[in-house]
Length: 529
Image (cartoon, rainbow, N blue to C red; front, side, top):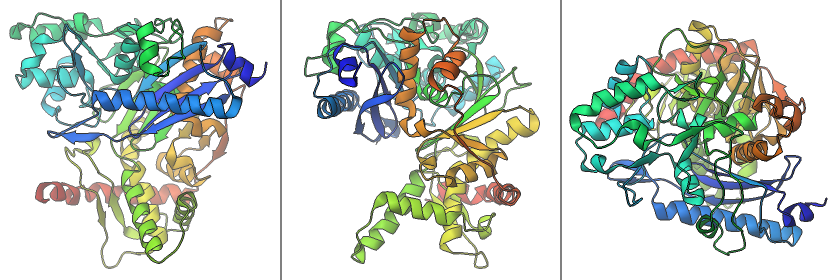
C-alpha cells in the first residue's frame, strides 16, 4: 500500500505528547515509520506562585497540534485523516489535576515543576519507607490536605495531564502503569498501586473526614497492550475541530513522557536505560532487582509494561543554555550578521569539546526553577568564575553543557557507585543530542559509559507513544513489549555509540566536586535575590 492508501484506509497510528514546551503529534505507518507530524509551541505560566497551563491552553494547543498534523498530511499526500488504527496520548508526568462530581477542575493544573510540596513528600516518604518526590501526585494531594485547602473534600477524580486528555477523548478514567507510578508507588508484582501504601494513606487522612479513599479517586491502572477505550463522538470533535475524524478509534493506555522515552529508545528491557535531555532531564534505568534502600534523588517508577525503573529526574536542563545562545545570537544580529540558529547551536556545541575537561574552573548553575536533588526549592541561574579560571568561549560552553546534566550525574552516581547497578546500554534522546557526538561525549563523561543515539531519537516521545499504540493493535504474535520493540520496531538496531575519553571522565568528576561545593553560592543567590 502507498502511504496515501494507509492513511485513507485508517491503518495509520497516531501518537501525541504534551511536553513542557511543545505538543507534538506523530503519525506512523504499519512498519512504525513516521509519515507525518504536527506541533504546537507553548509555555507554562507562573500563577499565584505555581507553575500551570490553563485548560484553554491545553485544548487550544492540542487542537492546533492536530490541525497542523492534518495540514502536513494534506500537503504531502493530498488526503484527509478520517480514521486511525489506534491513538495514544502521553504528557509530562506527575502533577495535580483534581475534579469534582460535575467534572470541573477544582484548582488550576499544577505541573511537575512545582516544588511547594516538601512537607508532604517528607511525611509520606517516612510513612511508606519509600522515596516520594515533590512532584508526585500523591505529594500534591497531601500538601493540599496539610494546607487545609477547601477543595479537597470535593474531589471525585484525580489524574495526570495524559490521564485527563485520555478521559476527555474516551470517557475512560484509566492510566498507563508508568504514568500511574508517578502518582503513587506501584507494586511491580501486581502492576497497580501498592495496596499497603494505599491503606496507610487512607488511615493517615481518615481524621480529616473526607468522603473518599485513595482507591475512589485515582484512575485504574493498565499496562501496555491493554485496550484503554475508544474515541467517542464528543472526543473526536474535541481533538479534530474540522469534524473529519470519526469516532471508534481504539486507544492504548495514556502514558507519561518517561514511558514514551523508554519505548522510543528501546529501553524497556532490564539492564537498559535512556536519558532524555531537553527542558528538563531524566534518566531511566530498568532494574534487575529492587534497591537496597530508599534514596531521595532516585524515584522508582516502571516501564510501560510494569518493570521497576530507577528514575533520576532533574527540573532543569537546557533552558539556561538556550538563554545564553539567545544572547549570543542577539549580539551577532546587532552587528548586522544573519544568524542561522541551528548552525549557531552546532558551532557552540562543537567548540565545547575544545575546552578543558574540567571547564578550566568555571561553574554554572542552570536553575531556572527549583532543583530537589540538590535541595533548592527555588532557582537562580548563575554563572560563577574566579579571576584565575580559564575564561574562554570553549570552557564557557563546556560549562553550560556540564551544568545541563550535572544534577543528573549526582543522582546516577548513587546507582552506579553505591547500588552497583549494571547497565548494558544507555540511549540518549532530546535536544542535547541533536548535534552529533557532542552531547554523547558529555553525557558519557558524566556517567562513565558509552552512549548510543538512534536515528529516530529526534522523533521523541510522540513517536514512542505511537509505538505503544501500535503495540495495542499490531502485536499479533503476543510478544512482550521488550521483544516487540526489539524485533518488530528496531530490528536489532542499537544506534551510533560514542564513548567518553578517560580525560573527559576525570575532568567531569573534578568539575562535579567543585559544583557540589559551590551549591552554597546558589543557595545564597536564592536567599538574597
